[in-house]
Image (cartoon, rainbow, N blue to C red; front, side):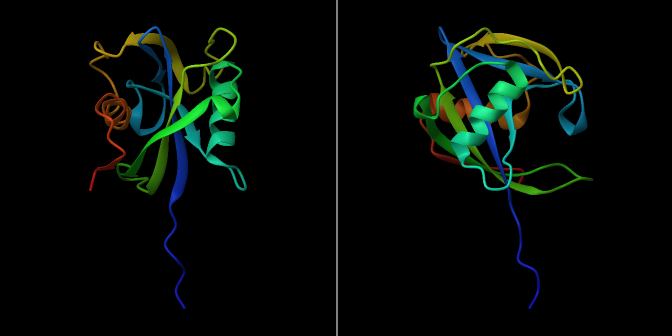
Length: 146
């Protein structure tokens, strides 16, 4: 029997305050130089909301409770070559949190900014833009790079 196909699970967190979304400027990998959302890959045995709480704390230092997180969309994505993989990424709405965001992973990101939802940066990752568009348009699912 051949090995089963595997998908990577991930989370993208739409941290929203005053109709603005918190975004990080990526410094590494295929999306270097592009603004993206707080988030990342799920760890073994972790739920979607647990992953979101962990990623938010690790990347920007905000405290969030699982009960204050809402899954609003799902992205099925293939990342660019040469390191291509497929992932299922949950887009999560976070509009209740405590603390002030700080850039905590300077090796991964070079900037942290709030952007108005109606005025996103030109240099935004395709998947972050799709996640935000899904939120605005109340779309539940998107496929990227197929």
